[in-house]
Length: 620
Ligand code: ADP
Ligand code: MG
Image (cartoon, rainbow, N blue to C red):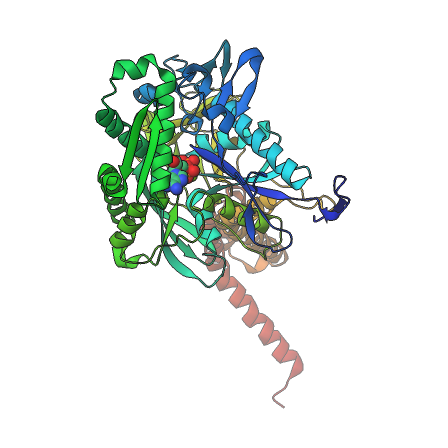
């Protein structure tokens, strides 16, 4: 598929199929590619050197939309029109997020239902998918501007714990932005790839990926073997990140300067400025020992020691999450071969030190931690473009998938931790005579009752022909494809024996048809064997009836009256049994007929032999 095209802007020859890797982050998003010259992953940067696009969308006058740094400055001054952290809302209903509503400064529509959330900005309602698509569109435009070529294909990363609804929402956002999303990849998997882990087929490694971003903390334990990435466990805190560090610094300064909360609330831009200074100080202290600044005439200062005291409680919490993740994976610290640092907040030296100390080894931190996920996505994109051997990437299902059965029970089709792609099918039937439809409700989770699990979808299979209860065979099949997206199908099957597949060689067979044929041959193997045994018995019976009938007709005078009547009765009985179709009864009747005919058959044989001897006179 590698077509060569001419770049109209530069006049140079180039490969048309540029697949980009995108890290669509809660705080920041960015794009990376494999550099056509060096073959190394690189992030795409604007002329000013900026690679990160803050994941923020601002709605201004006359429906103008600004994404990124331009939107960030409105966070505090125009909270209602400035949408941040939209990733937290992907694939969620209002009921899912209502406990966290205080976190969001913009309006989330409270419809108190399980349908997907909407966000109000001005007089317009937006879905998280649309909002994410604005961010992706911005990334796409930047990439096209930098690469001077159209960008239509992408790999997008998501947290390992994202469920199917969240993955699907991410994919939809890509499509809405005009991107063909070739693969959804787990962030820790991408980070491992960026460090070259799992590239070699022979490699077997257990990897801990520590990802401390702006507002979230994730720790993932992966097992890599034969190029397959399995998520052994995930843990973390969806409300812990660099933002907490900023807030801790702000609170510290507010105390120091004696600024009151009334003062700050009445002057939103002062608050905004303080927040930006806090982030600036935090970043500065990652490489320096002390920071000094000024806000509205107030002198601000912070040294490294003070900063570390402020953030230590947060870091300690993340270490506890690491312990939990290890425990869930059933592993000890010594089982971890590699530790990878991901997320801008791991630039804080205290974080690196603490994580290194906990795992007792040197951590991977040579790549920029806020770029490593995008870099790995580019590596994956390159693999998909076919430039990287026959590499296969597999993840696992984070939660069990199943359907609701009688009594609201969860019937698991694909257990959690199944390798993907993965599929499963099971048969169900109707409960009422003439029932024309059956409801399929799909759930995700580990609990026995579906009400305790998460509903992903529901649909009705209608048009089932009228049959007594229990007769229709409804096959429900689950397929989790390589992107971790679930496809559920329900099908009413006709009785297996009469069913046949017409193979038209000119069309070829789809993989599914081939699989179905193989499956059918196994399912029906036993039936087929029994059918064959019966046909064999029937054939044998017909032959015996024929030969015996001919024999008694030819040799009427030779048989006693009793022998004659017994024989005709036995023939009649055997003949009746042929149609009844019980092979054992047929065999018994054949035996009986043989018993009856044996004495006169032997007599006749002796007679014939005697005659032959007479005529031939061989005793001479
Ligand atoms: P996310 O994955 O949540 O989108 P990132 O990985 O980009 O976010 O991390 C963003 C966070 O990293 C922000 O809180 C930012 O302030 C912080 N950060 C970025 N650079 C530094 C630095 N040099 N020192 C400390 N924190 C930093
Ligand atoms: Mg991130």
